[in-house]
Image (cartoon, rainbow over all chains, first blue to last red; front, side):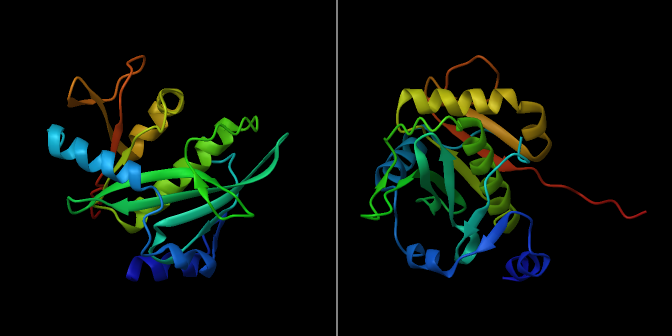
Length: 49
Length: 153
């Protein structure tokens, strides 16, 4: 939360806060992609960092 | 790359972003969402068009609004901002079609030097992750924000 407050204070150039987007907070908009991403992680695993 | 981009709206927790593409096809609303997947700190980058009449989201549509570089730069800016607020995250990007995956690859390749200043980037090929290299086709991309260690002087 600290980080969010700090950006909001700075008023980052080219970014505007829009409460209208908060309705998506608990919605998955790209379900197929998420499913694919989960499948990749399950079958391929993580990169060797 | 990031400089020539559209103004971006962001929602709570910096996980959803919206912007308007402008070109010959008119003004087209785009939406970007970072969704945490089954592994902690791993997110999927979802990106598509939002129909302003129906609010339906379509990530298969090809807009052809003659601004693909500006759109990619705007999506890249959302990634930078998302990782500012979620610095330990890995973000996976998978094109919804081969053409879009190719567009991502070209966008990354053309700006690789700049991107690598802030991110580690991997490509998925032959069922394993590899450090990203130009001119190689990948099925998906995974990025991680580099940790910057400040040295006290």
